[in-house]
Figure 1: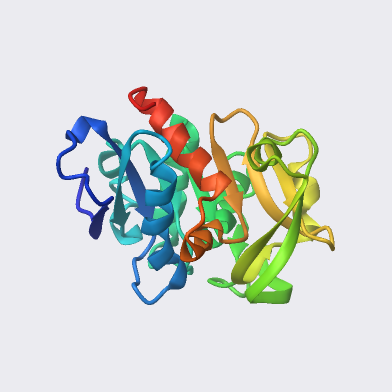
Figure 2 (figure 1 turned 135 degrees about the horizontal axis):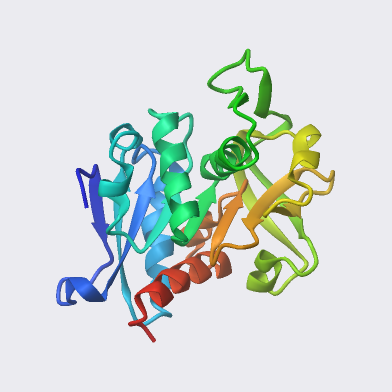
Length: 256
């Protein structure tokens, strides 16, 4: 699967055949001090317990991806673009997201991964080549990703889901409360460019600012400004992560 930064395997996976493992690419620059990074293996293990499969997560450093995206990522069953941006290689993160979008690979992007999923779509599908991330390029002509009007570092907030959206169905609720750790996000002034496109802004906060997106034509492509992985720190199974793992399992067609 390429040169990977680190491999994490769900406990008790040693006796399971490689073909029976769900292989998830964790695209980002692993840092054990990042709360979300510590939570991700735990939340995947909790979600996998309900599928009949085991999960092997492999941390994929963004720096190795720009020139080797296909060769590194082709062996995976799902891709999670993880928090803690700016990434060492923004180009690497964007190429990974594009690969998942174009190959219909189950995709989840949380926090920074959500931001870059929207950026990748805006550049490569809608054609706004000037769209950029102000955290990396403060002088961007089109700062699609910019500072939030109110930083959400270690905050909790309510997200309302659009009626008939895929993510609303996964939660089984019209509104949920989730945890954040971010100070940048998709600028609400740019939401009009997505009208009529395949990218649906499916979750908003109480001020109407975007907090979740999904691709309508993709089997599973969801991005959230919040960090559902933090539910694992409370020992909870999260419906969104469970659905992500189930989508990967369904791709394998080998799990219950």
